[in-house]
Length: 261
Image (cartoon, rainbow, N blue to C red; front, top):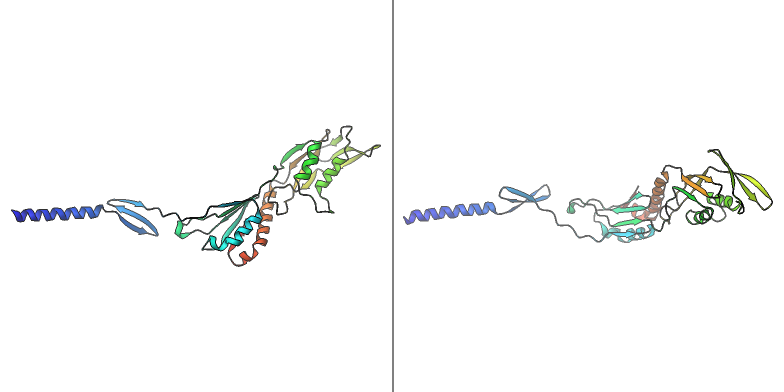
């Protein structure tokens, strides 16, 4: 009777051990991914997130270039760093996918153009507003040269202050009557299209020029309407790309950095 009880106890213990082992979780690696298998269930184990420095936001291309030059070797073990001029007022820097971090890309830096005036798309300004904003919101010509900002300012400066401006506008060309001196009036044709470069991207670079429909009204106010279909945005990105390629030419030559649109 004791032998039978001993045999039965051993069998029960053996089955209990087998059941216990079957219930114990087991880690299994499949194609670089780790799973926890417990009985009939399987759960993927999320990889530990690798520590990364905080993303740095800059407000100028100069600061971005300094950061890349001084830290490019420490930011990634798998060069290059990609510098993307993805908007007319923003540059993003990101790494190649990291195989040890679930192929995530890290974005260490971002530059955003700051302290820019409002976009000039479709505006109408009074005489006083125009005299101020044309001087403050648009890139002027180099010293000794003139551009269409000077043309508009010169036209405004000859408008009479003691009477309204007379204009003749057929929708294609416009003629305004302005006072010349104090004794006689002169008819002066107004160019319907002007080329201007408002401040719209990083101030370290030349501002992209674009065409505007220009009109003068009887109360001496003026209007400017963008007429290039937004192509200036692509021009701005190309100008920023050229600036960065010139500033980072050593890093680009060494294969550490790639600059893209």
